[in-house]
Amino acid sequence: MKQLFKFFLLLAIGIALFSRCEQDHSSLPDPDDQIPKEVVIKPNDFLSGENYDRLIVEIASVQGFEPTGEALNNLKAFLESRLNKNGGIELVPASIPSPGKVAYSLDDIKKIEQEYRTLFPDPEEKKLTAWFFFADADYAENEGDSKVLGIAYGPTSMVIFEKTIGEFSGERGQPSTTVLETTVTEHEFGHILGLVNNGTNMVVNHQDVTNGKHCNNQDCLMYWAAEHSGPFINLLTGGIIPSLDQNCLNDLKNNGGK
Ligand SMILES: [Zn+2]
Ligand SMILES: [Zn+2]
Image (tube, rainbow, N blue to C red; front, side, top):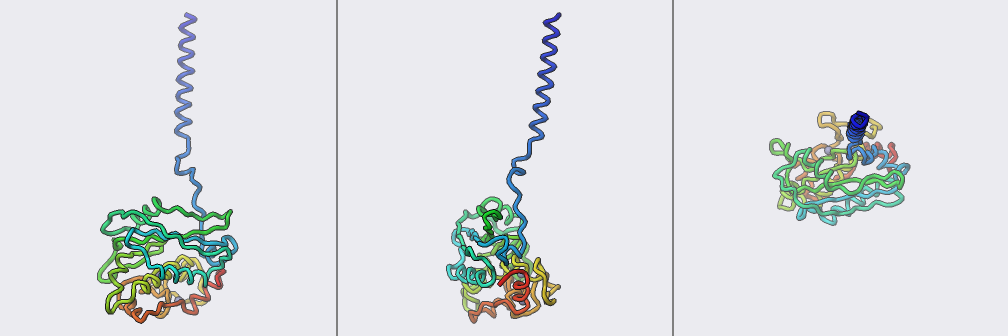
């Protein structure tokens, strides 16, 4: 009888331990939660040198859809002229396999970033990073004749529809590929810098509200049409890349930029 009691006691302890064990397992944090959450980045972190004094821009392209070296040099010079980064600004090209899509939704683009982005902001090292994906297909949400050439979709994340840029550049009556790539990459980075009224306050009101976070000056880099195919980009055939107008420059300076 004593033996039987002992057996049941052990069985009871065993069950108790087992269920405890189960509970412990289920209360373990999800592996994804153990990855430190991405620090929140604001336009001011790019513009001023206070929190971050260097910047690394990851340029991930599908093979055959890389931007020209000249466009990257132009982007670097643009960033150097506006951002206070005494530790330097570096562009790091990377090649990724074609995801094999005929068109990309924003969800697709975010998944590609999750899979392939390797550089993230590091506040302790004062190192800021940004991400460009140069895509081998059009944006899935294109409507009508005007096609989207680029999107800034996160605080440090941008996509350039390089296949679409190829279609609208490099031929007679079109801008050169370098000029169009430079215009669109600088325009998207302008959004990351908080233009227009997109995290960087306006010194005077110059937002083209009808077209979202854009500048109301047709000659400005941040005019809405600079990221769409159409008559505006065909004006770039002269080879002149639009620059930021005084209102946009004032906003950047007022938020810690040069
Ligand atoms: Zn835009
Ligand atoms: Zn402007």
